[in-house]
Length: 83
Image (cartoon, rainbow, N blue to C red; front, side):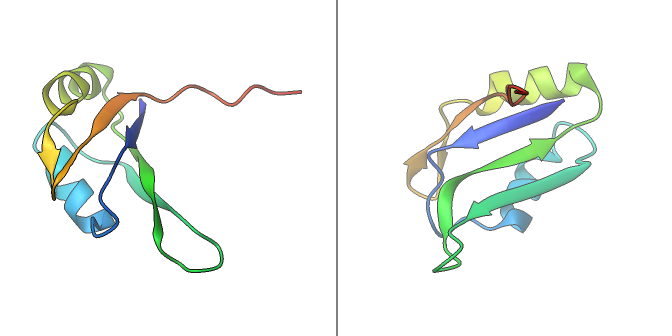
């Protein structure tokens, strides 16, 4: 299941996110969305946990926690609409 993580502090790294989510299951992928001009984090990213049950627990447990000074929002990522 693909998970959207929003309101991340600019200092949070992919390694930190992977470590946080790996407490709930095997992390298949982790990617921060970066600004193409500055290379800095845009404050959100995506995590993929292959097992739906583990992903749901991670979403429930991690939504609203304080990570590096920011209260993060965690939810299931919506698929992009195809046109």
